[in-house]
Image 1 (spheres, one colour):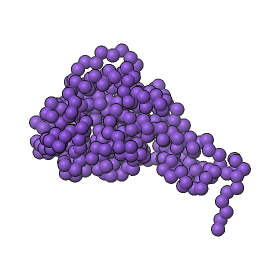
Image 2 (image 1 turned 180 degrees about the vertical axis):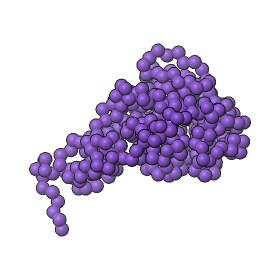
Image 3 (image 1 turned 30 degrees about the horizontal axis):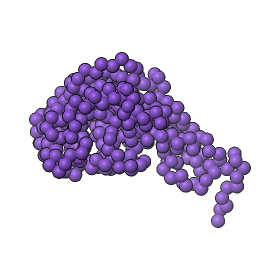
Image 4 (image 1 turned 180 degrees about the horizontal axis):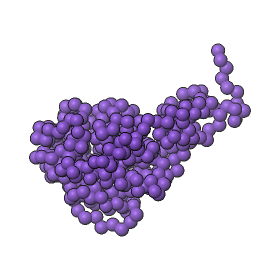
Amino acid sequence: MDRIRELIERTGILDNAAMDAAKVRQDRLTKPPGSLGILESLSVKVAGITGNPLPELKHRVIITMAGDHGVATEGVSAYPREVTAQMVYNFLNGGAAINVLARHIGARVVVVDMGVAADIDANTGSFVNKKVDYGTASISKGSAMSYEAAIRAIEAGIDVLENELTKGLDIVGVGDMGIGNTTPSSAITAFITGKPAAEVTGRGTGLDDTGLKRKIELVKRALEVNKPDRNDAIDILAKLGGFEIGGMAGVMLAAAAHHVPVVIDGFISGAAALIAYELNHRLKDYLIASHMSVESGHRAILDYIGLKPIIDLEMRLGEGTGAALGINIVDAACKILCEMATFEEAGVSDREER
């Protein structure tokens, strides 16, 4: 816990001097001020995060964290629990959607076993074993994990991020894999935002109406059975969460402490962002919301933290797929700032004052 506190204390405010310099340059580029919309504000935000008025995002990483959930055996997913481990191998073999999109944007994918309910036999630099346990317990019957395990999950995420820093890291996207993990994410979202369970619980992998009703009842039961401490984000994670959710929260906290922009994916990484945000409200300044998930609870998460998604492509896959697309747009925003000519550089007449 001391390590988590230390990171939180190290997270400062954004670099206002870098942001001011970036804004001045944005306003001198060969375009009407504000004409590139969110691309302009994104580049200024990244300047503030990195402390560099001309930020370059050469080293891009997607960290995809995997974990299983006890509640998955209670009919909350259209897919069997075994798919989690199978998809981890798919990631490592380069065959999943996140691999395709990561290659598209020139990012490396780091796959982390946070709590898969099977041993992953892998010998590759893109795989990291941080297994806390072989899946969580069912949140409908009691705590997902112990308080100590929740701390270990967050600290494991910190380890992963800090290890990637040694290899080069300018921007990080966070994604997930875990059959059944929209259920604990719905419980976390309902509890922290105060929204009704039915409002923030969606169909996940494609439940029918009967399955959705069962899922909503399980989320309600989890909240009634566990009664987390509203003032203790780690207790919320321990009682309602998942190992990959804790790991992603740790990645976010560490990235902010090291002045690295964090692009969050969809609903599951959003739930992790809720945990991390409750631990450190300054984290908001370092987060970039890549997209708006189809999952009904995602909007509640972004509204609660105060983030606006860059795109809305009606996605709900996870894995970090939305984060990869988001990184691509953030990179484009920074390239506009750094590479586009100013009026003076291009010899173009500026607009006349009228």
